[in-house]
Image (cartoon, rainbow, N blue to C red; front, side, top):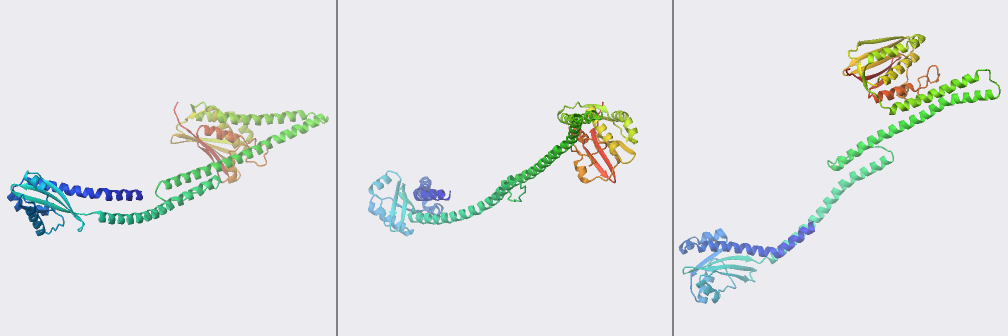
Length: 447
């Protein structure tokens, strides 16, 4: 761009500027001549000095004579009197005849030694001849000097531009290189962020990559957790199936070796039923994740009473007392799949009966804003934080000895979580001071 601007400037200065200057001076003389031709001779003689200053020209006047020698001598004398000395100046006889017929004469007299030209306009007014002239300096040397000076400016501007371009490119490339390194680290699962403050689109790009890094890290950790859960799930289900399969195989071998005392088949039937129940629960868990729920409005308090009535025998067998506090319940109608919520309540209460360390189990129903909150509390041994983090996972049991009479299959809370997630119901667990509490909430509605 700098080279192009310099080339255009060089061409304009060399070929068009002299012509433009000459054109402007011709226009200036033409305007003055047109003005003077409309004035009287007396007025022109009186205002001659003012017109010279106003238009920056030289004006001389003399009586019109037909003799070329006399007329030229008088005009040169008058010009010399005003400081204009011309080596070449002559009004030809043909031009004098044009003046005699009222025509205006234009001419350009070159003064090579003075390195100037003298542009004149000569016209006759009554019996007077007026000569209006303007000196024009030859511009060749000036233009060459200007072009040379412009060349120096262009070279300096080129180096300055290159320097600024290098600095700007460095400012741009440095953060881009840092972003490229960060992207390479992210591709190698080394999630980190960059602190780039450029105040432009690069800073916005860096912020976007930082957000992407955070989200990818979260997704990676979640995927690792799911993979670990899957490994634990496979390990747990293998453990659950390994024991009954081993017993079935052992008792089958005993029958084949005629060691059956009459109980082998019943043991095989029992273990087969346990395996069948485990598979049914797994199928039930998978079905709950994909099943369409029938959302409706129902009385949560009435549903809880029905569940407790169905568990009355189990409550008496475990010798527990269940206290229900619904003093802060004003709107018992909630929206959800009633049969699925029945499964949730059944699991929570059954777990409380199984694991409660004391005789009492407390259930509370509270309206909080537009939601109904269900909470069940019971005494429990000290609960590890690791147990709290994994309690919703399939096959996880609080009894690490995995005593079937106490622990069960470990799928109940996983089923509960799936159902509550489908209801978009907030839920969780609190464990403090040897007490454990499970809670969830449902949106309150009207019948």
